[in-house]
Amino acid sequence: MKLKYGLISADSHAQLHKDAFTSRMSHARFGDRIPHVIETTDKSMMAEPSERAVERWVVNGQVVDTRGVTNCPAITGDPHRTYTPQRWDEVLPAIYDPIARLEVLDSDRVDAEVLFPNPPVQNATFFQGDAELELACVKAYNDAINEWRLASDRYIPLALVPYLSGIEAAVAEVERVARLGVRGVLMIAEPSNAVKPVGDTVFRIASSNPALGTLNHFNDPYWDPLAFRFIGTPAPAFSCAFRSGVAISEDKCWLRMLRLRSRSSRNFYPT
Image (cartoon, rainbow, N blue to C red; front, side, top):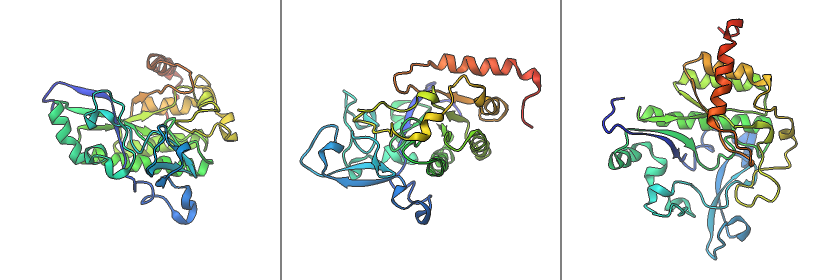
């Protein structure tokens, strides 16, 4: 990529098309548990109640964001950055179409974007169901967001990591997306406290999911194989996220990476 404007956005968001998951996941296996958009008139599913029917993303039967169907307010021209489309036909193509988005980048004089996820992704993964569903959703997301990278080298997508299937599955998925050409990974800052508390009315993360009570703390050696894979593969970019009131800065995330790197004399790098 040749820099033309001298500016790279380090925190942009890409919206996957509403059919991204239904076209990639097994209907026979997962049915309506697959992330998809539904129409509803239930006001409890609306951050701002309305008399008209709205659309919302659902995963495993749960609405994941009551604000709307996407979260890219800047691109809509809203100076207050609060507008959220309530139906898919209100979503501008440049929000979900990587080719249409290039015109916006040129208009804003931005060379490239690091792409974080949008709904239906919450907490940097899919915690609304079991391990099998989460892994399938993560793979579908990673395959779909990789298509942005294939559309233009001006996009730097961050892949997701599965948590509920064990560390081996997490490492395997990082290796897989690295082979695809993805160069960045998004990980929850503190997996052991990753769930929104009971009473959350916006993101609707499944706080009662028993599988989430067994996730290890970010500093637990359990994550070492994944951390070393970050260091030892062509996918070194590593980003953390705020979750559940636990503020772990990105500097601290990188500090853990550096500490692990300093221990590399143990010859722990996988071959």
